[in-house]
Image (cartoon, rainbow, N blue to C red; front, side, top):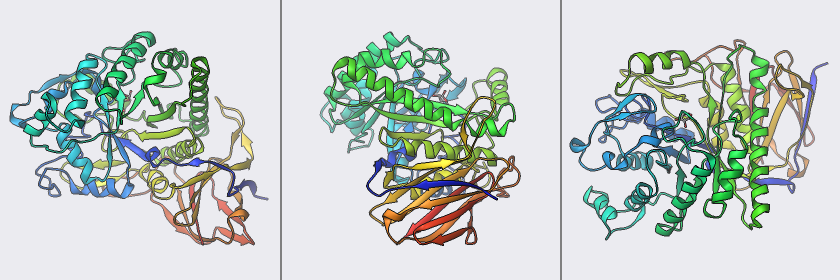
Length: 504
Ligand code: AHR
């Protein structure tokens, strides 16, 4: 008999309305993300501003609500003034994080133009590595103040009359990491972030600020970093960031697919730490979470180390061009489910990154843009994961892996789009051996019918897509579900990503 799992959801028992910004992304001045990625004048699809239309089409398809910019490690040695004004006057700079040359052909004004075309918002990071309060305030004045002051008038002089009105700002990047230019202790950072936040909110009280949390659960300072930094800046910030990347370094697929449990533990620990500081401070507001870097990242590690060591200071070198396989798409699906499960506190998240650099979208210099395997779970979550997340009551058989115990074979969550009157169930079967029948109890929602069952599956965990051939693409299946009153039974094949869409 096939293994079974069961998901029950109740209309009135809700985690939260999902903030659509959890389907955000990230563009860093790194490798070919900007140059040769979103921007390639001369490419047959380039528009009047040099932006690749084929890339824009794929980004728009993803309905990306927010894009973090311009880094990442890049931001900690970024001189924003070099990236504005007449392009011919902009200097080339040594880019320390990735040992590249930054030509400054694209800066904040051009990126804002791209963001408008991509129908997305910007999450802007400021440099708290080599710089501080003054540079952050000047950049905010340049971007958000209407006119009549030094930096707002400079923007107008640069041809941008209306302010960019950027709402979300990150106070530096991964300041806990020794690799970060201008790395700081938690006390040094917490103090600087608090002072910067207070000054920035004087300029524009409508902005939302993100404090740097830990760069991964593996950091020796996690979670004391969060405690210390928040103890300084609790009152002046709105979110704390989390970053996490996973990899299948030992080719152990079961263990690899269990790593979303670590992400879950990470989120729970950060929520507890925020609430501990809230209690210490007798504060009223909550600090919410911005999981503003997450993905699989390990495939290109060795070639990247070689490029940076032996061929430094190139403009837009091939860096972090991880070629994703089918099992990576499964883990990405599991990570998306984990984010949705915590939608009461995780209000923003950015898959890192968007184009060419650990990315769902790749470009060929003299050819098309194409979708990696990980594009599809993100597409489905962003398209169908909007609305309310009912509290999932999930029972599933379990297994152990080398690093994790009690790993559920099935991970699942449902999202109720109350505006469209649709319920979408996302489910991953991460059992390497068994198909599993998922019983769905949707009774409280009334009479819904299955509109489609989308499945991403492949017998080869290492199957990849290329510019020429897509081995891993979603397929529609009509023969894997049975209706029994308001109960459904869905057959989830071994190692598969499933999207079951129910409509009235
Ligand atoms: O996304 C790639 C890099 O990962 C970012 O620059 C940095 O913040 C993180 O370590």
